[in-house]
Image (cartoon, rainbow, N blue to C red; front, side, top):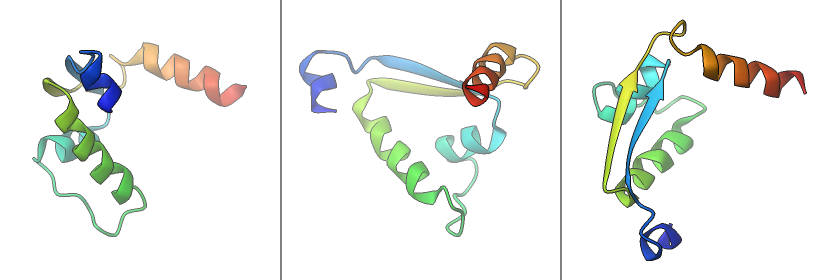
Length: 78
């Protein structure tokens, strides 16, 4: 992530997800379940947030997230 800083790539970003849990945990509205299998990934993601100038998390419904669902389905079927 030093490369991001050196090349001025650490911009403001918006993360859009249909996972209410992900958005809640990343914004601090929900606690991270310390017994979950994804804990290390979640904690790492929270550390990486510091490398961006600004970051927003926004929840959308699965219906609104049809493009991502299509891409995920294509990836699973390969």
